[in-house]
Image (tube, rainbow, N blue to C red):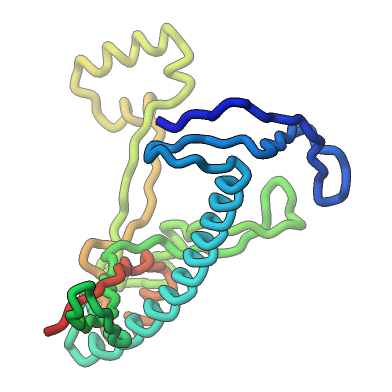
Length: 248
């Protein structure tokens, strides 16, 4: 475990905000304080701060660069998958080949490898959203998922091909908050209750969900059906993984 080497130097100092105002956060100037790391090396605290900040900056830059490249790859693979699937050749996963690289090992051996990326389509969809006026402030627009009726209206008779209703029944809050009604509910549970019992004690919510397997099955629809489906179903992003393959 790292330890601070004596003498300890820690000098309080003011921290200024980007606008030049004094921050409520307290600053510490470590001066030339040394810390002995696990390897027994003496490291200046100031150097450690600099190394940490630089490493995190590089990490952030690398993550942003990776995200931009991933967007390009997902767009490209999506187009290839779509074109092939329309012709009856659906593939869930693809490996996209990049440039080749070369390294020389300490023993002088030269190794050639192939940069690649594996893209796998997720068979999950979200219900598309639409902009509607905010009930609290009609001057503002908010996004909400399409209702069951709206999806039915768009798809018509094709609804049962691509979607299904997902029903959730939950206990009313008024029942939970009322001792008498909770007791009644417990008695109801002991007996076999019918539709009227459900209406009295439960709220019922029906949402629309995309059927399993539609990532592939959508390509078995007609072009018109598929275009309608794609207006009400938003696919999850593909899963992308970098791969480096050593070559002979």
